[in-house]
Image (tube, rainbow, N blue to C red; front, top):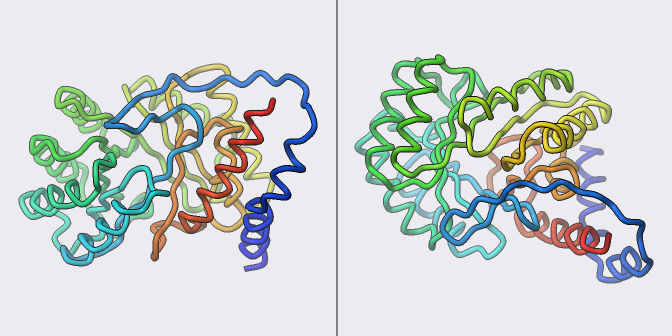
Length: 292
């Protein structure tokens, strides 16, 4: 709780116009920053400027999801909407998921739509076999209502390859993901996972880890910058979870993460920040980063 309060206090301070003026009034030394090769989905450019904010749905009924989607769609601070189907009471019914998903896409007001079944093995709401995971995703890809598909890298290798190929054939971008809710892997391991995602054909590379110390957060940030500098210019989505890791959700423009998660109402993972406050801080950092 103390860490969360410190983060919120920092957020409010960073949102002060006086602090912005003070932080950007003096000339800074030249800084070399290696940016992503941007990708554009609908009218959203990922990999340039401020990190784009994803807001997930967390409802378990069609009515709840549609209410959330309407709020997200009309919120100017949200850039993308994540349709979290593992929360749904009918999470393995492709026809029902698709019918609702098409309504979610309309409610999104033109914002890119990410489809995600976060498995129990990686912190999601429900367990599913790799075979059923693949069948469900393949059925939903064919219905052409999504812009991006979250594919967990540690599902069966044949399933992962099949899903990446099918998504790309349908014009859908792939976010390949890895989640560790227990610990922060070593920097070498984080880099290895992201490089593997790149090799598997992901369009956006994603990892989320659980820190137990500030040093763990620095490990995640260092690995993110190292991937960008040495190995890949694909957009990244990297974060340390929980209150201790909240800074990683704010500092992406400096440490090479091109997307971040915010919340409106209920969080889908520990450490998510309110979308309005998140946007304020990202804007402050963006303005300061532009002065280098």
